[in-house]
Amino acid sequence: MKTISRLRYFLYLSILFVGCTTGKNALQKGDYDAAVSKAVDRLKSSPQNKEALEVLPVAFDLAIKTHLRKIDEAKVSADALKWESILYRYQRINQLSDEVNACPSCLRLVPNPPKYVKEYEDSRYQAAEARYVLGERALRENNRQSAKAAYNHFVKAESLYPSLKGIKDKIEDAYWAAVLKVVVQPAIINSNTYRLSNDYFQQQITNYLATYRGNTFVRFYTEAEANKQKLRADQLVELHFDDFIVGQTYVKERVEKLRRDSVVIGEDRRGNKVYGSVTATYSIFEKQVSSSGLLNFAVVDLNTNKLLQNRKLAGTYVWVDSWASFKGDERALDKQQFALTRKREMMPPPPGNLFVEFTKPIYAQLVDNITSFYSRY
Image (tube, rainbow, N blue to C red; front, side):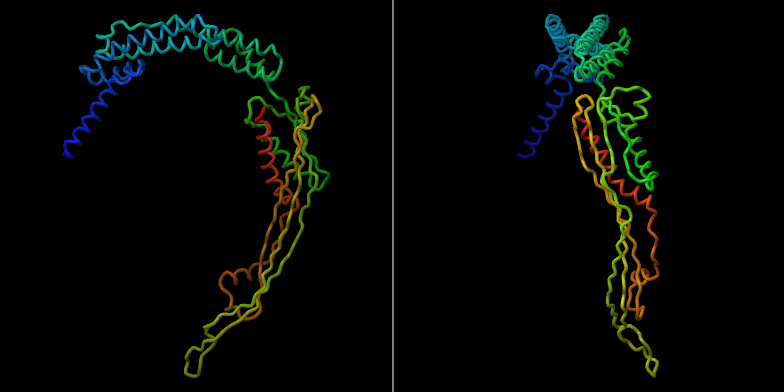
């Protein structure tokens, strides 16, 4: 009984598989395009497949009629983007015909499959023209959001019909009307000592902003660039260090009493090893040099003079060194402890380097804040 059940199960799967590969199931579900494609694929590998031979002419006829009906409906609709739907329908008809033309056995069932090349090209132009008109209409509204919409319309128009007259200029005009222009002031620090280190921090910011790709419609400028281009900026980013401390030093000492048993401490008269305990006083020194700062990050709307963002970004860097000494028997120390006693106290990095180090976490926060804030534009 189990054998019969398995045979029925595999027979069912075989019938289902054949139905899927011949397009019969797709035809029954009304997916005529898929039915055509599956039947064509089946007939390429098996030109005498009975089910595929039955499916193809019926599915192809229904697919073409459906697309043509949808085209007629779209032409009389009020949808401003109807030509894109019409273009898609002509494209699908042509693709289906190409599939049939590439299958010799299929051509006996569907001779001379129709191609709508001129209609397809006309639809491309009409679709691009419709986008162009929508873009011009949006651009005349004279605000950033409408300019963004106009830009997207013009880009789509170019993708539909690249040779459309004047389209590249329209894309350029819409883009710059949509762009938010932001001037970033250099980070201000009231210290000549750390001027070079701050210049390095500022250069990191400048490099990031020059390669910023977080939002297509936001462009950043240095003050020098803005002045050179006589730019009318929309926003100003202000950066300045409210406070910073470089090189605060702390030294800690920890003393441990060490003892190790079963250590050879000598020999008796007979030359036998004598075991005992050894001890040592172990002193561990740790020096921490802490540097920290607080950067104020503010964004001002230059049209309304409104403060849009104001945050304090904190950064800290702690340089650590450790060494040790001992009194007593060195055999009471393990290898790591003994190695630390061979180490000598190190000099901390120069103050300028410490300044750069504590600005690294500040830079990371600044990048995150800029990315998050300008993603909304």
